[in-house]
Image (cartoon, rainbow, N blue to C red; front, side):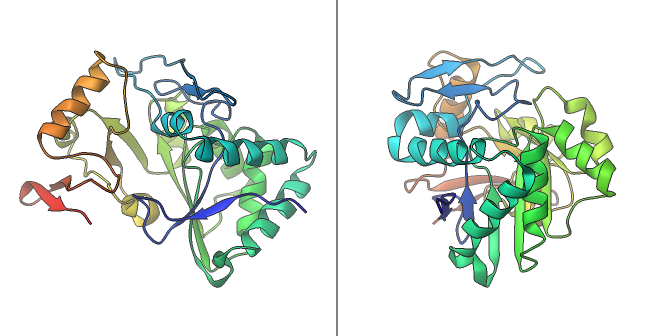
Length: 265
């Protein structure tokens, strides 16, 4: 039986398992960040619609564009899921795939670095699959809020071990209050986040265990000359170089003492 590819750790997610699908192609709720990397060539196609005057390329799609070894397994995951006709079949695949990893002993799994919930059946399959692993914390960012809200209304809530963060800047931002779920938005500067009194999450700690809305700092690569690109350059001047191995400084907001800098490993 072919299995989904679930991977351990990356430069940002230490001690965390993660799994992905192709960005853009599986993101029905995306708007300000909608970006596609061609399956064969990796060529980037921009399809963003600004939200609140803000748009940017999806960092996950940019990774897919640059790195065939990232792009290929995400498409293989998607192909495998699309070949299954029922929710039950998807549940069986997800459960079997998790059992073949170190997660069987417990841990944390981020569902989607790239991609999102592309159908109600797929969303429901992950919710059901999580019930087989009470010792695993599952978490996701999502703009697929119609599927999230539909599940909540039908089932009276979410599984106890599945944590969601609504990702702002999508087609369905108006549904966020109805989900009773925390949200996150991308900012071009720490000052923008500070103005709304939002802490910046650099490690996914807020996404995993936080209760309040939070901020994310733009990262990845952006088209030259755009507002997003200029914001990245400004952040680099302050020492923030993203989440790769060469990243040295994280900017964070401490509500009691103001802005501070923390050294990353």
